[in-house]
Length: 142
Image (tube, rainbow, N blue to C red; front, side):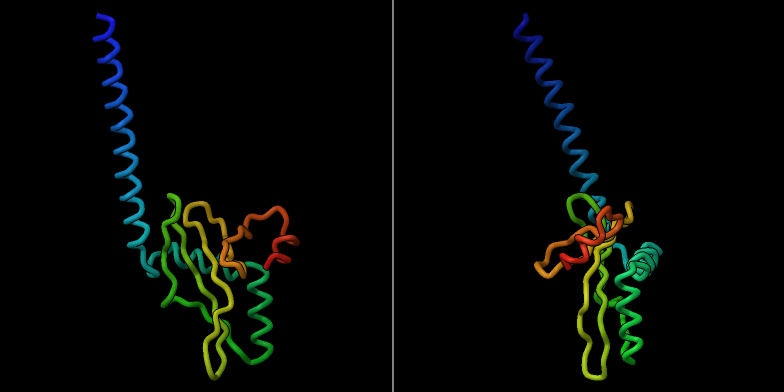
């Protein structure tokens, strides 16, 4: 009798645990699909762009280009959402425009829910820039 009880408890645990994992997997798949289906017409894109353009380094870069009669452009055509480790991000690219070409300056990721801002460094890694507790070390890394 105790073996039967143990077997039933084990089966119930397995079913409960298995259901939670299956539910989490389905939820993750739905979240990923919803994230990747988001377009630049979604209000979250405008919010993300506003966040990026309010970063001090972006303001300084844009002002520098304006002083040189060049333009800073966003990459709306190239911007997209990315689903990474269960989180949805806007990938936002900034370009320098001159009469000959567009030149990529930086790529940012903005977490849609938490509003964290990351920047791609020269090694291709994304580094958190907002909120940041130590901006001086971060700017030296870039």
